[in-house]
Image (cartoon, rainbow, N blue to C red):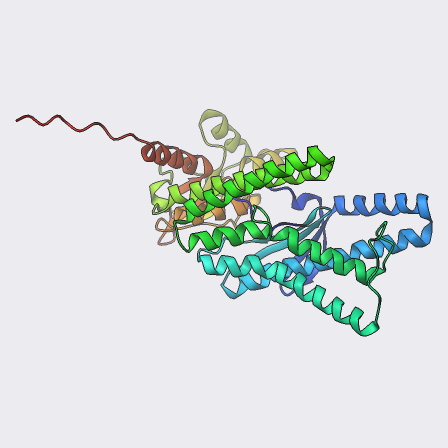
Length: 385
């Protein structure tokens, strides 16, 4: 199944690049294979070989690889459609439970989000149509309900699986494509945050139905799907609330202006003392008043493990770290901060360092905005005659 077409803002993603192998690069997008996929193939291949022999094992593995080729094309449907609207894709990762295309951001226009969400299942519709035409011209009879995946032939199985993918992904529940289609349709008539909450509530309602059906009929895969849908809906609702609360805020509204800085000549040992003596664990590096890079706590640990505590910061600072400006949208800057996997973003004004943006400060801004939004208006003063 298609796990998600968009990045998870909260960071609770179900995959990690650390455990992925790069397969290649197609249409400017890197494609990765999660190592659990290889374990899944090994398990299926061995189980089929033990039960039915080498030929059956090779057939089932070929079918699975063919199916996940369809999943990959599904993800490219999302990614290439998003590219039309200026939205890049960091990478695509294949896992045993489906594929993930990590878009740089969500489309802000509901119509664009709808088209991006629909593009994936549309690819499966095209694949199914092509396979159906091939089978029609070959005159293959429609097989009876197969007892296992090896009956009916590769093309009939691929056709059936693509149809299942279409139906499943269009269920109106996050994080499936149908949930995003529903949200986009609702967002054309109501505020984005309200549309997301409504779509999330519908998705969680479906999760409850999945649980009941799974327990009633003993289909425990439905319990897994229900958990997946419930978590996805919750994350989307939280993200929408977060985006709504940050709406209208700029980086200058949340940036830190009281902080310590390093110079390229400071040493790893000096930096350790600053970390232990103060609140900062990560520092901007400034030379002659100009910002030149950042040093994180992990960078210092790595430098110390190299065995030279007196080496200068210039040897291990990050000179290519991302940065932002004081008038940048705070929500967009938060996404940049999260995607960079760095603890801070330097804030530059006219090329000079004027502040730091950290996740902690943004969370504090969210907390205060949430408290203000929930404030109860005081009762009106009594009117005297």
